[in-house]
Amino acid sequence: MTATGWHSSEAELRDEIVRVCHLMWQKGLVAASDGNVSARLGDNRLLATPSGVSKGFLAAADLVLLDLDGTPLVQAQDGTSRAKPSSEILLHLEVYRQRPDVRAVVHAHPPLALAFTIAGIRLPECMLPEVVINLGEIPTTAYATPSSAEGPRAIRELICGHDALILDRHGSVTVGCTPFEAYMKLEKVEHLAKVALVARQLGRVSELPQEEVAKLIAMRRTALGLSPEYNGEACVHCGACGKAAETHSSEGEGIVSDELRRTIVESVVQELARRAS
Image (cartoon, rainbow, N blue to C red; front, side, top):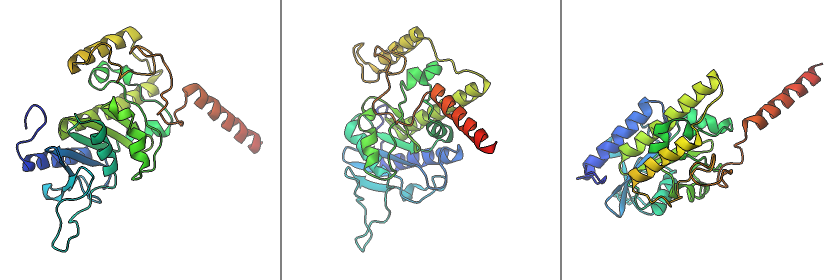
């Protein structure tokens, strides 16, 4: 594998995808046949995980060779495809359309990051400096029915400026130059969710000061070779990235503030108490 993410052979790329799938399964980032991984093989083809196969038992020969429209290229003697790609291949194809620089896509169902979306809580990416430097903002998409055309639409704008997305009630999408690089970003997302959960259990979650976030983002932009004026990855929450704090228009409407959530819970408890009296 070269520094740019190209592999010297198809066999090498197949082996890396399989290794990533096994790691996802071993670390509980997917269950059963959930999740999928794909990678570019040259400019016009993709290798992708098949439908209905557990990532923990996947073999290199199971991977499906596709064109950039998602059509399987290897067929059996009767003309039918030997294996079908995951129905979530639509997500992957959208990423490749929007991001020519991306060579690999990992879609997983990290439990804690997923739980944050169900609870309606934003994942606080500005809590850990290494997350700010390595991932930047991790936005949550609007809800989309899995395996439908809604999925590509939900990520279309956000994926252009971000390497990690949380899919409302449906997991995560991370991208990179190689399958392993995309996988490592997945690990960081779930690690952040773990730390955030424990912090919430211990007390109030404290995010980094705006001035420190600004320094970390400057470091990230330097590492990526981005100009100071580039605002494609600007965080929309605290304004430290140079963009006014606001609610992202593409985020799910189910993401609500802690204050509103407490108000709702208190109202429900009061109503239950009234009915029981």
